[in-house]
Image (cartoon, rainbow, N blue to C red; front, side):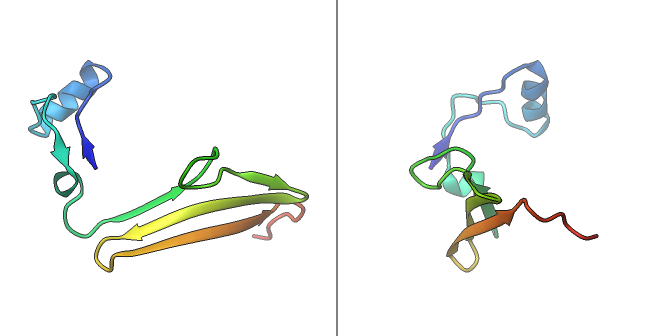
Length: 90
């Protein structure tokens, strides 16, 4: 994974300069983007190659998520079933 900084407006450019980042043509490697102990989570909204999008079923929906943890190198996939036919009790 690689990335380049591309501020959308002057406010974002100012924030980057404040963080000491001035070179917008530089490629940042994964180790520079996320160093140390990192956790990442994502839930698919629209269908994609990696995660399904939200699928609506009678009375609810099904979502797919991925959780990644760098310190243990674990990757977890979660399929959650959400029920809309019952109101939560608080």
